[in-house]
Image (cartoon, rainbow, N blue to C red; front, side, top):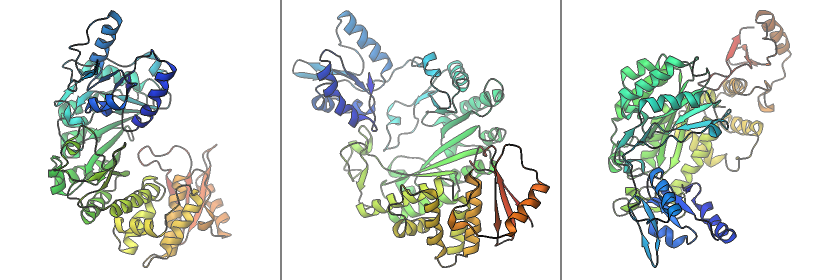
Length: 494
């Protein structure tokens, strides 16, 4: 059975006719969200597909195989959609009452060296956001603690670098979430190898004090949280049936970030109802102001099966009819507005989410008086076109030359800030030409530093003189910080 999603359905549509032509007797079964909510349309459009399974597929697929193997009737197989003569038989998306079978095999574990392993410990979501499919599964079902603990240990010991839990809202049940956190922490560095990272999708407003107290004991970098904000506009959140205590959400995120031991990733969605450019700018600046380690600016997808797709009168917008069904315009955001936000997204990813200009981006809003959104917007519109494939050195020169010309920016401070960013994130230890200053004092300062702080054998160092606050700064390239991804910097007065 081939599962279909927005990222592969186009390729599946292309391959099916070729596969059927090459192997006419093969039986093709499709499942996944791209065929679950419009099966009749899919079977009309894809004559090479023999069967569709709508909804959860573990149980129906097994029943289908048994029926085909033994020549039994297909009637009554939950979620099964197929042709019967000139008719198309459809079924509602299936939701199983039973816990799905454990999907892991020794062959799977053997492929995980240094990769991401995926783990499902619950299915469904207690919420019903209008843009999302997860809430269609009749609430949330939690897998047994015994199964979850067994799978966690198996995946952690497999050599995977990250174990990503795909539960849509991991802490929907806060007591259960704490039990799993505690299970991991009690075994971390023992049954669970030191260095394995666990990724969770979290509801920020549910991160209560008891949970935060437990998280404070986690080894640095052991946990990574992805928190979906989507918007800070109350009218927008209400329109998409997303219940959020905004003040509590912001407070909890600040407190989790203040722990300093958890990598935090925040998400925003552009294109939601009642979110115009001004409103989105405010949401962006609020999210940016929380200073997450990563801020993702995503764009609304009008997915088949979601309330936003099924109720166009309630949720008016124009969107691409081909996957991934991205919104093109709304009554609140024009096509030009969305194009601008795509440019801001590109600048955000290269400047902020790359982690290579963090100090620079803390300095620039203070120096220019611009908001983060305004700063990125100006850069995106004025300077960043065609930079996708630009080398890091050339991009650094572009950033320096553009922002050094902005009113309020001190060129020396900007240069020194960018030097620190470069040394902390690039293990070559070399500065790009735009940041280099020929100064004979550098060699003398390096000799003093190496006499005071002997280099660790086998480790490279990067050195530079700073001039806004005269000193020498250096990075030693050993292990990166597991939360920030940076190498530590040391300043030395010379």
